[in-house]
Length: 217
Image (cartoon, rainbow, N blue to C red; front, side):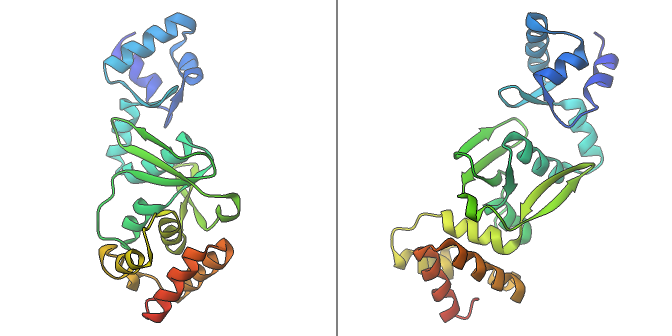
């Protein structure tokens, strides 16, 4: 199979499963496994997790269109479904924390899991069903995925972050967390309070009371 023919077959879809590859390459069984190994070795196929790949040809098109950010966010929803982008990545994207975050962090109802790939890393944390909310629909080409609103990304982040004691919490909220509270408008602050109440979490209620007393919310 020449490179032109291969490119035409593997630049069509944002990701490939073994079944997709079988149809695209016209192979199956051990012959398909041979081609997958060959294309992985040539860096034409890039593994995301077992049985899920992207092609370098498609990735080149993404970069040309300057859509890498939304593409990777979309892939996060494919790797672990259902899930929505949240936590550090979303907070950085919104400017709520100053650090650049390159791992795509997401929330899922499934078990905590991390995936490392040559294009980026994907990290998933678990939230119970009642807290699996507070996200907006985003679109990558004709595909949809979800990302947390600023208030929900902040809630998820603080809810899932372990703290030793109240002193560490207070220090983190005021200083070490480097959280830009000014980014949150009145509606976002009200939404944050709503999620705190919905959670029934003593820790989150303590955090909210502290933030109110310091005029941060």
